[in-house]
Image 1 (cartoon, rainbow, N blue to C red):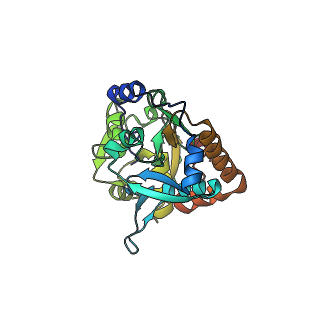
Image 2 (image 1 turned 90 degrees about the vertical axis):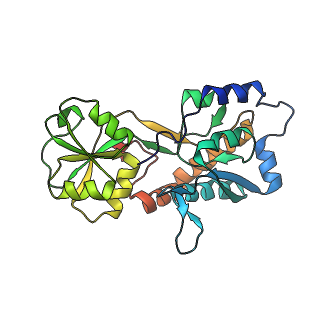
Image 3 (image 1 turned 45 degrees about the horizontal axis):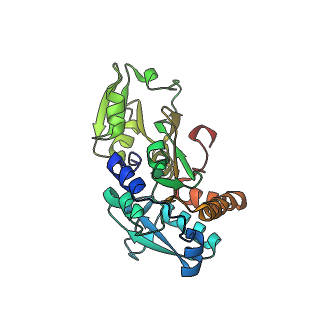
Length: 268
């Protein structure tokens, strides 16, 4: 399950960043600093598969976000330097200048944009249903599942969302393998997860299930960095745009999800 926008950025952090004068008009643009240093310092959790995690054999960081960060760094002409950090303090670390960017599925929200600048979105997701491959019933919304059995991860925001709609028989599971098996065995009618995780689960599961309809608000994820760096922002956006155009981003996305996650779920 994708985390709910990674971290809830409290008002105290925004106030602290703004009060400290995060934009220093006399400071060099971050692009100049990064180019001079020769490295882009990138924060991520390192414990969030398939986005970023350590390979069990090599103990090296790998994952979708790792590959995207390497793409961006290469197009900026610098080397990536990864910094693994607890996700609960990842935005505070960015505000304190401990790293240049975060590449860890950070949702672009108005609240966060008060404290940080963001790149253009590079992943787009929404809650999405999973159904059996031979399903003929039209489940195009959660309301359509009233009177039906819906599988969700125990303790997830998707469980809360499903239980908020009267009439759905919600069954909670320890994880995706359990509800996918029950779905394939016709013990539930559908399952619910984030569209990015749905793509990953379906790519790695041999069971006869497929992606269903998106059933919630779209969320866009980008790369945050400190305000006051217009050259850096332009360069990062160009790096992402170039990777979209030359197919390198799609190649990374297909590797991890089997679909292009820079497009909205309904357009994939």
